[in-house]
Image (cartoon, rainbow, N blue to C red; front, side):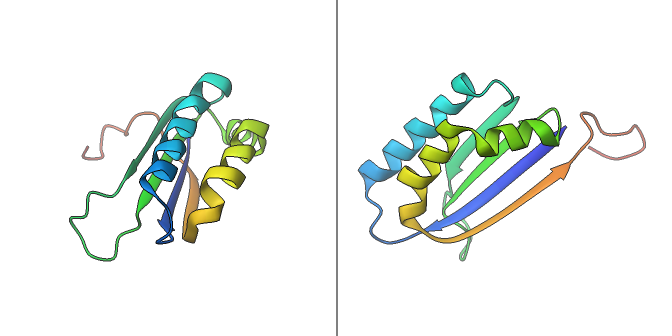
Length: 107
């Protein structure tokens, strides 16, 4: 499996309507990008000071599936129109991970 994680801190001018539009747009991506195996996103619940505001995690069969998602026109349009105008800070990572933990590792 291949996982993509992105965290963002939003600018103060992002409205509740902007947040709702972002969530709705992200929610549509698994229907239009078949390479997505698992897709989760959400706002930080505010338990710890200094956290990012929002996270997206996406799983793919391999790095090529991620690259297809990354470059997909629907994804690019969403990022440019609904996310980028409000991003104050962004962090991301992509990594390979086994579909199941080896038996000798604690879950």
